[in-house]
Image (cartoon, rainbow, N blue to C red; front, side):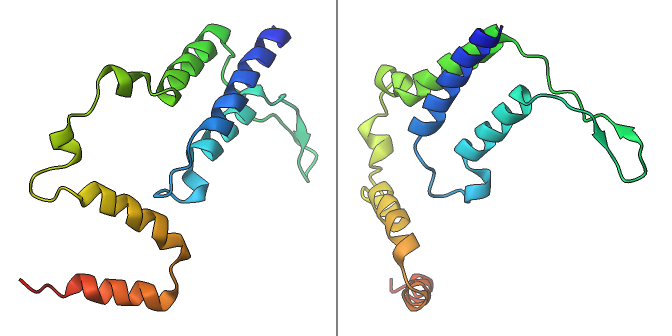
Length: 135
């Protein structure tokens, strides 16, 4: 069983490393951090600890390890990572570039890329410009 766990952990480590970083979410709720804490919880050894009043306290038992379940989850995430479904079911151009605002999604991506490097004054100016509409 230990070698099977090692294989599953190896796959999990590869997926966590290769998974793209989501710039919209804060770091404390990123996919990588959540999955790493899940793996640590499932694969961590259970130990008994002693509290200050000498009472023995056992931590909550981790979920039962199932190699089949782990490998199915790894396979599903791997297919998402390799864009299997994007290639099988491509997004139509009219969804990616709607007639009302064809550059909307491109501008959104550009905004997300610029936001982390923007200074406080630039952010304030963008906010003011965004609230004033001339039309």
